[in-house]
Length: 79
Image (cartoon, rainbow, N blue to C red):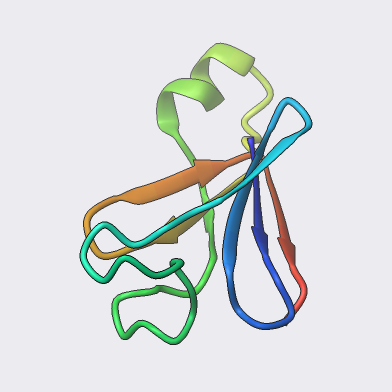
C-alpha cells in the first residue's frame, strides 16, 4: 500500500494500482492536512516484520489520523 498526500494536502491511498481518495467520516469532506488530527508521516518499524524478514530492516511509514494509523510501504508527499 502507498500513501499519497497531494500538493493541496488531500489524502489518497494506492492499493495495487487503484488510487482511492480518502474521505472524512465526520465532516463528509475529504481527509487532508488541514485537519488538526492529521499527523505528520513518520518512519515505522514493526518488530514482527523485522523478525520475520531476518535482516533487521523494515521500511514502512506511519500516518496518524483521527481514529487510526495508516501503515504503508511507501509515501508520496507532494506538499
